[in-house]
Image 1 (tube, rainbow, N blue to C red):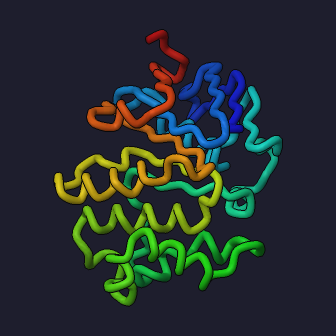
Image 2 (cartoon, rainbow, N blue to C red; image 1 turned 30 degrees about the horizontal axis):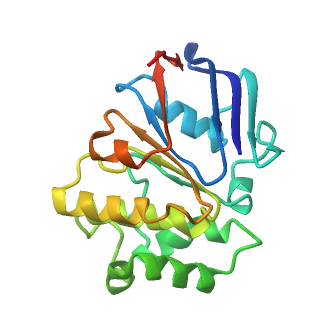
Length: 214
C-alpha cells in the first residue's frame, strides 16, 4: 500500500502541499487529478524523494520513505515517469532505460531489459539511438520503459498522455492499462482523465496542494 498522511511540502518558501493524504491499495490503478500547479508533480516527486516533507508521513509497502535516499526507491520496486521525460540526451535509448536499474543492487539489467522489451518491443529496434533522436511521443515510451524497468510494484506516471499524438497516446494507454490485474499499483497524475477514467479504481482530486472534495 502507498500511504501518504497529512504531508506538507515547501518549495522556495512557497507551500506546495498542504496536509495532503492518499491511500492506494496494492494492485489499484488511481488517478490523481488537478489543474496545472495543483501539486500533482510535487506529490510524485515527494514519493520519489526528490522533495522532503516538512510534515507528514510517506510509506510504501510498510517502509517509511521520509528518511530513505532517493536511489533506494528503485530497490523498493518504485518507478517514476516524469512529465518532461527526463531523458539523458548523450545516452542511448537502452542506456536511459537502464539508469535506475544501475542504481539498484537487486535488479539484473538483462532480465529487466527483456521484460521491458516484451511490453514495448518497438523500443528494441531503436535501443542504440541517442535518446533525443526519436519523436516526442517515442521519447514518452522510453520514459515509460525506464519506469517499468524498476517499477516492479509501483508506477508513478506524471501526465503520460500530455503532448502526445493520438496514435502514440493510444499505445501508451494500451501499455499502461494492460498492467491491470498484475499486482502492479499505478498512480496516474493528469489534468483531465479523459478516456482513462473508466479504467481507474479511484480518482483523487488535488487543489492548491490539498485534498479536494469531488
